[in-house]
Image (cartoon, rainbow, N blue to C red; front, side, top):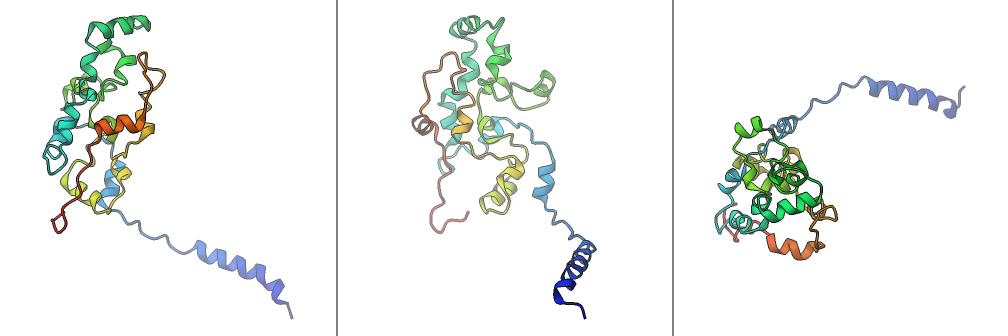
Length: 203
């Protein structure tokens, strides 16, 4: 008679073989997961403005327009910017130089053809989608409600939650006019949270 110890390896092998032949579960595909497979595209600040301009919503659009971010591209057209670019060895118009546009325009990587067929413009400067991600997959009310309810993960539709690491991609020593960067202080200047709904109010 074989001992229990000698039977154990055989039982384990049988168990693994049984698992190998269990059919995989059908994937739980949702519209959010379908969206994840798409490529997020920039939609432009006017699209963001549609829902983020009212006092009830937090006046994010107004806060942005009053910030230096909204004028980032514009500043590249000044004589001062031309002098800075020249000192850095950048030839030509700073408003056309990738080295400058990288931190002065959300749309800096878009081609002329892409811009022509988009509502995005260079003139927006550093707009919402620079920090929150391209908005084509999360801009709809349906998606926003699902995000607020915690039904889908923000990353699955390209929505980013920016923090200090996002800011220091541009606010760092590589900038020719870098004055230092106090994240807490600077964030307070541009903070634009969506107010919590009043108690009993419909979300």
